[in-house]
Image 1 (spheres, rainbow, N blue to C red):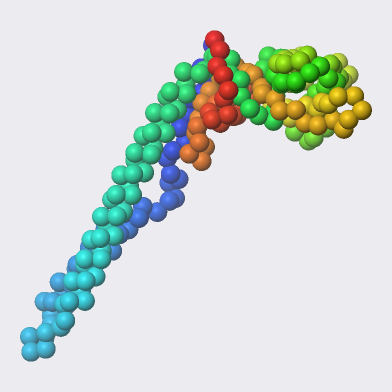
Image 2 (cartoon, one colour):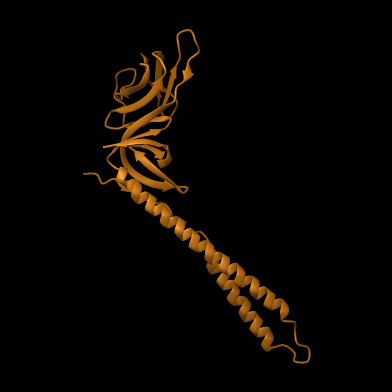
Length: 217
C-alpha cells in the first residue's frame, strides 16, 4: 500500500541569514565598544554619549521590529501547516479542478466542459513536448459534457500515467473553432505547499487548492 505524501515546504533554506542573530551580534559589539570608550575617555574632555545613546535606541527599535516579523512569520508557517493538514482530507477523493492539463491515472483521465447547444467539439491531448498524443472529434450535448481519455495514443499504444496538456475547441458549423473552458477530474494523491500556496496532487498533476471546483468520495 502506497502512503500518500503530505508535505509542507515552509522551512527556509539552511543558507539563509538569520537577521535577528546578526542584529544581536552587532548590538553586543556596539555595547562593548561603547563601554570601552566610556571607560577610557579623558575625564577632562568627556566624549559626547548622545550619539551612542541614539544609536542604541535605533538598535533596540530595529531588534523589536525583527522580533515582530519573526513572530508573524511563525504564525504564517503555522497557518500553512494547518491548511496542509486540512487539505490532506482530500487524499483518496475525486477532485474536480480548473487546469490546462489532464491527469492520466491508472490509464484513465477525465475532463468536463459545458456547451449551450449541441456542437462539434475537438479535444486534443499533447505530451510535454507539445506533440499531439490523441485527438477526438465529437458532438457535444447541450449542457454539461464529460470526455474520458483511455490513455491510448493515435496508434493505439497505451501512454504512461502523467499530466498531459489538453485543448478543447468547439463552435457551430461554419464558424471558427473557439476554446471551450473545461475542468479536469482525478484522485487526490497528496498535498504540499509551494511559494506559500497550498497544492493538491492528482497523480502527477498539481493544482492549487483555490482551483478546486468540487470534491466527491
